[in-house]
Length: 110
Length: 113
Image (tube, rainbow over all chains, first blue to last red; front, top):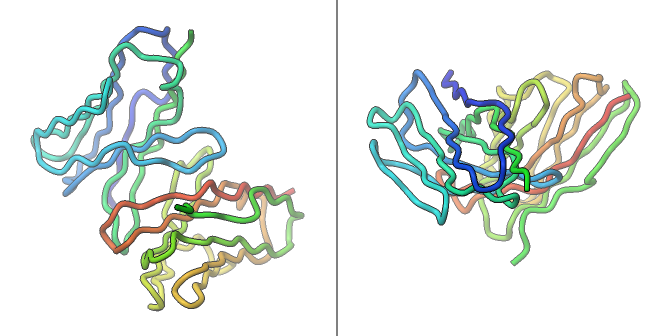
């Protein structure tokens, strides 16, 4: 069974600060995905990283896939209250479904 | 266009009762997934449907859980003789094909008293 460990589990910071959340595994994944989930809603896909060492940017969010394809990170620059939410990494898919980490609960305080 | 819809949005039931949860996938999506999200376990995969094919039921938590998909579209997840540990948010997702991006519905929050 492939497991994904996310850290930190909870993070509360002030608006304007930078932060990084991590997603680690002992297994190699062909790709990893990052989702954001808000209360009462389902997860929404932010990005998929496929190539080892790949870096993708989405406005103030930077996603990196480790060279060995076992880990990934999400860095947010100048966090805003609208970034508040549950951030989930996931791998796998297809007939076996996605394997999710337990998520990072992020709160950005004004 | 319409996204994945799920009903009911909330369900409160008594221990031992049966419940049915419904998922309407995005039109044209052949793949459909059920997941369960609980505080302790996070998001866990339950079952996958590809079109009208029979699903692999090995991911279902117990034999009290069953799922079907009619006409390759709407799916229902049934939990018989509900237990308190079944309390969770049940999420449905669909995708155009097996390896494509999954689009999630808002979920059904199930509370078993």
